[in-house]
Image 1 (cartoon, rainbow, N blue to C red):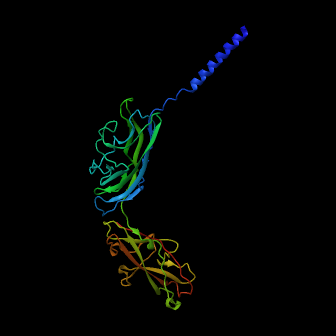
Image 2: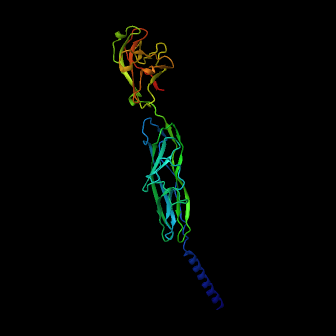
Image 3: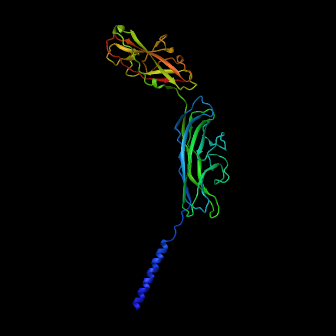
Length: 361
């Protein structure tokens, strides 16, 4: 009997142990503390922007966009919702900024340029925020996320940003440095059951660095690779050295010049195709005793033509006073022709080339 009594006691102790283990397994998990997170976003501006010389104040020079997401977790319905705040410590505002919006206009650090930032679905403003930020300073509320009875509420607030680079006055070439335009915070105001929470998200809307360049003259597409076709001629027309024939006109078109540019010059570069004795272009085709001579032709006619001597490192193709720029554009007229060299020309093909560039003050 004594042994049986001990066995029964052991059985009861074993059951109590199992119950204790079961009770531990049934204990509810503690709710996670409320938390909101996000990451910085950089506006997609081009890295380089050309400063137009004639656009009016208020004109848009470039645009950029960015999207930011704010995720909150561990929210309880017994507390106030977690609210996302944009602002508190905004970057320097431009004098043209309207605190009531729409949008926020920031200074860029470059005279004559500002950046206007707008947002959806909630419009950005820089008005004083009386109850929506850690210091109740300039900014606006993007949205909020509510909790649930179990304290596991989650949600996301999304903001889409558009920005425009605006001319506010005369602009000089330079660089806009990267700027943290808008910082973001989240907070739960104090209320029944909580003492309030406020914290920086460590996330910013960022204006990237932008290089500002002055406008420049440029060649039209058709002038970047010019094919000049000379007519076929009889060898008898080139029977003596220095005799010319088969003249053909061609032009170089320039556009986009700043208003300050009034004249332009073309330079032809020395190379393997140039005869340094005659200053003409060497024939790379099969015809013998023939070269190609270039002439400048102000006004586009054959009148008052002058031969271009290509010999030298960088021979001037045209006096800068002879080609004027009007309305930011110019057409530079030239001619090419056969010239007999070293005796009577022999039958065959003629092919050659030369590299040129344009220059202006």
